[in-house]
Each structure stands twice: as structure tokens, then as C-alpha cells.
Length: 155
Image 1 (cartoon, one colour):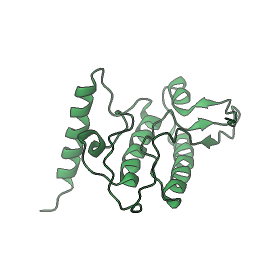
Image 2 (cartoon, helix red, strand yellow; image 1 turned 180 degrees about the vertical axis):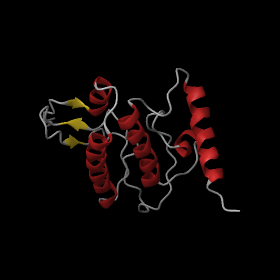
Image 3 (cartoon, rainbow, N blue to C red; image 1 turned 120 degrees about the horizontal axis):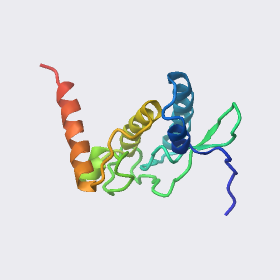
């Protein structure tokens, strides 16, 4: 196996080393990640495990270009991108509630949720959902989803 060398390391390590990123720097990294992740469904795939550790920084100097990695759980739904998936996978702190609850889900929608967790980490320096107990983490994530969805309901 041959891989490109990314001397800047994991994006999450970079975020933690700086405590959190400025809005300007976070915007640059987020835009690059969105661009990279947009390519995935254009090829008919869903990543399903996006987390702040996945983007790698290719240079340590000013340019800081990201390379998206960790496609181990990536899939190409047989029925196309609108085909619902059932495999519970991904990193719990960044996984969409549907994955954690074992419900059928659309892969690109799960990736979109994970991008929100990544954006939060860029700006705050830590993940939005993190807990020492996996079960407590699952309860928090599914509770937040219910709370946000109920606020969006129309009268």
C-alpha cells in the first residue's frame, strides 16, 4: 500500500493544539472538507464515518491543504444514493442518530450530520457529543436529535 505523506497530521490534533480555530481558519478547513466530501456521493458512495481525525493536513506551512481519509466504512448503495442503508457503523461521537438507533438511513444524510460535528469541533476545540460511557453518549445524541427536530416543526 502506498499513501501520500501528510506531515501536518490529523486535523483534530491540529485543532486541539490550538485549543480551537478562528472562524476564518475553520471556514477554510470546513470548505475543503465539504469539497472533498461532495466528491464521494458524486461517485455514488457514502463515507459513513467522517470525524475530525479523518482529514489529514498535507503541509505544515501556510497552505494547510486537507486530504480526506478513512474510507473503511464507505459504501456504494446498490439501489443508488436514495437507497436506505441499515448497517450501524461510524464513530459514535460523530455518527448520526439514525445509525446509533439502528434505523434505516440515507448515507449522504448521515455524512451531513457528521459534517456538523466536524464544524463544531473546528470552532469549539472538542466534539459536540462526548462522554465516557458509550450508552450515555447514545442517549445524548438521540435526545438532541429529538429536541432539534421538534423545534423545527411548524404549527
